[in-house]
Length: 514
Image 1 (tube, rainbow, N blue to C red):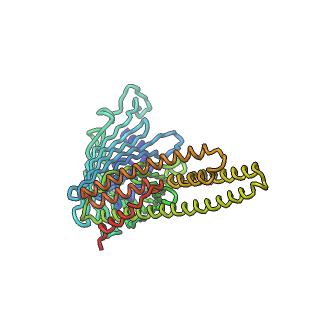
Image 2: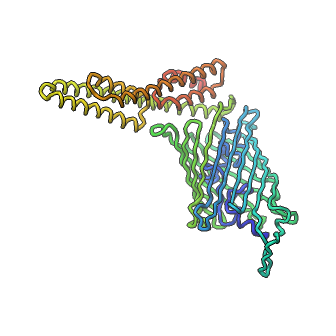
Image 3: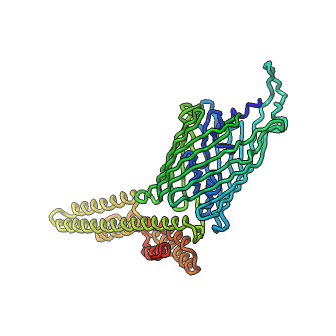
C-alpha cells in the first residue's frame, strides 16, 4: 500500500513539483492558460499575476492590481471516466517600487473521489537594483487521500473492517514550502530568470516512520521580448523519483499579439510550445487570448506526444479569466513603466486613428448614397406623369427599402451607433415627403439616438473625472491609462473624441520630452 498514492497522481500540475516528476504517465500542465500554453516557459517572463507560481520576482513587473481565476480539465476523455481538474485563483497588488508587490494564490488539484491537494501561497517581489528583481513565496501545502475501505493481506484475504497502516494517523497531511526567484533584465529585450521551488523540500508523508518530500525543482529560463512578440526557453532540473539524480526538462515557446482593432475592440494573442525530457516525456501546447481593455481571456490546450495520455485522452484544457484594475503603479525611475506607458499611448493613438478613418469613410459613403438616392428620386418624380402614381410610388418604396436593407446590413457588420444615427437621419430626411411606413426606421433611430446620448453623457462624465485627476497632478502613467480606457469604451461607438487627440499630444510630450 505504500506505493499506492503515486498511482493516483494523475497530473503534473501538482503543487509539489514540476510535474514531469510525477511519473504516473501524465506530464505537467502547470497553472494559468497562458503560461501552460507556453509549456511552463514562464520563469523569465513572469509579467502577470501567475508569477506567484512561476517566479515571484516577476511580481515586481505587475503594474496594476490583477485578479485571475483558472479552471482546467486534465486528460479529458479517458476510457475509465476519470475526472481530473485543476483550479487556481490569484491576486497581485503592486505598491510603489520601493515597497514592491505582494501576491496571493490558491490552487486545488482534484482526482475525483480519490485525491485532493491544495496550495495557499503568499508571495512578494521587488526591484532591488536597476536590472535585478528578487522574490519569494511561502506556501501552505496540503493533500488528502480518500482512504480505501478494508485491507488485503498477501494471501488475498480481505478484511473489510481493517484500516491500512498508512492511514492509521489520518488520510491528510500539510506542511510549509518556500520558493525563491530572481529576474535579471539584461537589456530592453532580453530577460533571464531563475527560481528554486520548494527549497526546503517539505515532508508530506502520512506516517512518521517514512518521509515523502516535495522535491526541490530548479527552474531557469531566458526570454526575448519585443512589444508584441516573445520567444522563451526554459530548463527545469528535477529530482527523479526514488533517486538523488536530477533530470532535465526543456521547453521552447513563442507568443504573438495582434492588434485586432479592425475586427474587434481588443487584441488577439497566439502562442505555442514544445516540451521534452527523459522517460519518454514530450508535449505540445497551443493557446489563444483575447484582451479588451482591462479584461483578458486565455485558453490553453496541451497534448502529450507519448505516454498514456497520447491517443487515449482528448488532452488538457485550461481556461483563465484575468482582470486588471486601478491606476498603473507610479514609478518615475522604472524603465518598465515608461515603456509600458508609451506602448499604451501608442496603441490608443492607433485605435483612435483607426476609428477616425472608419468614421470618415462612412461619412463619404453616406454622402455618395445621398447623392445617388436624390438623383433616383428626382428621376422617378420626373417620370411620374408618364408612368403613373402607382408605379412611381412603388419605385420610391423599393428605393427606401434598399436604403434600409443597406442600413441593417451595415449595423450587423458593426457600424458604430453614432454613424447609425446619421444614416437613419439621412434616410428619413430623403423620403420624408413620401407616404411610406417609417415606423421601423423611426423606432430604430430613437433607440440609437438614446444610446448615443447615453454614451456621450458617460464620456463627458469620464472626461470631467480626468480633468479632476489633472488638477490633482495625478502622474502621467495614470492619466495615460484613463485616456486609453476612454478610447476603448467610446471610440468604436462614434462618440466625438477630438479633445482626446489634443490630450494625447500633451501626454506624449511628458513621456518623451524633446
